[in-house]
Image (cartoon, rainbow, N blue to C red; front, side, top):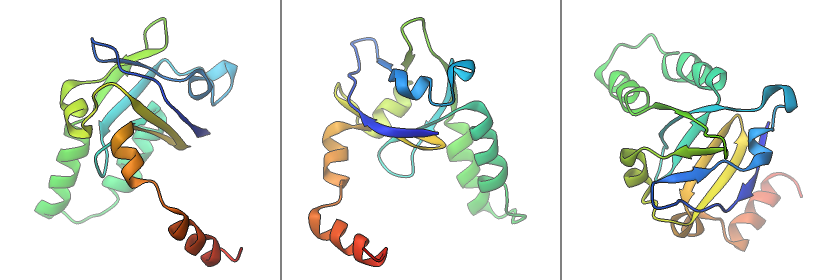
Length: 145
C-alpha cells in the first residue's frame, strides 16, 4: 500500500526520484520498476502500478455500459494521456512534458502515497489545496471525533 508525503525535486531533464518507501511499498519481492502515469483529476499527475492501473481502467473508467460521448471523452483523456514510465537505476522517472505542463510542475514537487496510487503535485499548487484547520475540524466531527 502506498502512503506518506515526500518532497523530491525535478531535475533539469525532467526526472524525479520515486521515494524508496514507495518503490518498496509492496515488499522487497515486489519493488516497483515501472509506473503508469496520467493526468490527475485536478492539477496533479496520477501514477499507478501496472495492475492497479488495469483495475482503475477496467473497474472505474470502463465500468459503465454507457457508450455516450461523455464516457468516451473521459477514457480518451485518462488512457490517451497515460504513459509507461520505467524507473532508472536511481529510481527516477522521466515526467512526460504534457503531464508536467498539466500539473504546473517546475522543480519542487510533493509526492503523496494514497493507497493504490501516487499523486505528484507541484508543491506550491499542493499547498493551496491542503485543508486548513477549520476543514480538518469539520471532517473530524463528521467522523465522530
